[in-house]
Length: 495
Image (cartoon, rainbow, N blue to C red; front, side, top):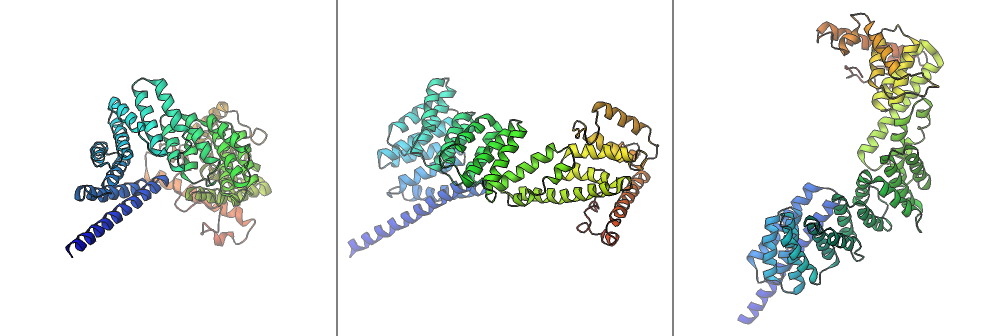
């Protein structure tokens, strides 16, 4: 009876340790998943839970057959939490509890990783070499090679460091997660070409999800080494099996890299290829967004906005909430800009204030500075003696250096700016915009009131222009949604 009780107790205890270890492993995997999603706060919470659970096994039941695995897992979690001293201590405990040569080798390699982070590079080199001498899994082998390469680089042994880093980058048995970690690490130490080589192998088979950690990493790499990423994307695009959404994703990568090289025309060509290859894919939608953004930056005549109107529908499915929000703002602003310029085209100087409002829309909402400059200058040509001339002059000066198409509006750069400043100096001393914008009113209440009244009069003038085309405009003008010409109600500062 006593023997049966002891056996039952042992089995029950084994189940308890197994369950605890199972939970800790699941929590660790969840933490890695949070890191891949760039949810750093959640990852820290999950790693802390792993440390607590494995710590109870090590301290409470060191004789358990799971104790050495628990110590290894705790060490890994502590490394992720940048708890270097704790990781050293736990790895020593893991070596003491090791039930196999493999566990001992992993413990030594993890200790070498922690020692390197503590700046103890000679000790790290020795420990990592001992870890690599054992039979460890591919991910650990790549980690230890990478860490030893860093240590040897710090020791001035660059040739040996290069061999280790190359071996880590070419580890064919590395898991996708391990490969991504390695590629990111290579990027962080400036090994951009090696980072791209590892990323390319992942991109060749990974799902073309442009919001995945892999694609986000490649996008970051394209900022740092655009020529390298451009070359990588080109090779992928011409490889076998590069069709549909996958090919569109490669064109998207190339477009982003070319943008960061300052090759605007080439970047736009790549984005257009991505849209054409798979317009309904995530890559196609993202490419539409970036193409709109870039085309607005180079737009220098009103027709350029008209040409964009077909792209907004594609970009509505862009990857992030911020991208979709900006696309919606651009679409609404483009329609408003079109309406304003259409009013001017039909009514000429009698609708000149529509051009002034169009300039503000281009400047603030579309961030199309060349268009804004052109509209400000055009307004000043149409009605040089307008009561809102100062507003247009200040607006034009705020976007100097962004000339419009000379066939649309003349802009002689610095000469035009000198003329604008001269016109400002000739304005009446009580001009409301001059008082408000150059500070001559000194924050005087009367000056502020004059500015607000001038803005209100401009809004009323815009309503009058709309009424020429729509008799109900005056009735609906109080609603910003129903009146795209009317600026937001909270607009009290110069735009």
